[in-house]
Image 1: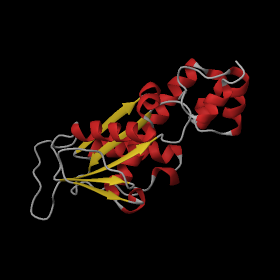
Image 2: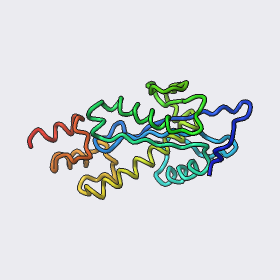
Image 3: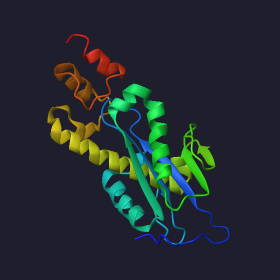
Image 4: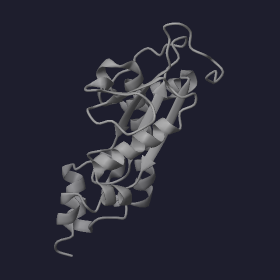
Length: 200
């Protein structure tokens, strides 16, 4: 378990990496994670979650939880996404993940070019999941957490293939939408979901 009492030494400020998973799908939540890595406990192989196999992501997520100083996750569901739009929902999830961090970091580095409003210094990093180890760790945590949630949705709605496409607009998902219509897990404001309801 991480040593919560650890204090950073000279040249070792607490820096959190933040990333999200699930902005593009038609169904399911958007998930954000925040991670403060422990420089005393390096984790080899951290990389953008999109470049890793599911098995490798799972193995790295276990190491991150075991070795990081802090790991937090926040989830914002489809109804909130529909109400405030996906960008604002993503920023809300990031903000909630950051606010859960203990100890609080001295700096937050967020993947992309949009930063949530928090009472901490925030730096946006385009391509941060490829260049920043803490952001890469956060991308892995967010992706594995969201994938697990999508497997739960698959158990509820097995005809949609959420276990395979995780809610993204694949041909199989779009076909299921046209044949079966949207579920409560779908983002009703997203165009393909709207279009699937036109002939109800």
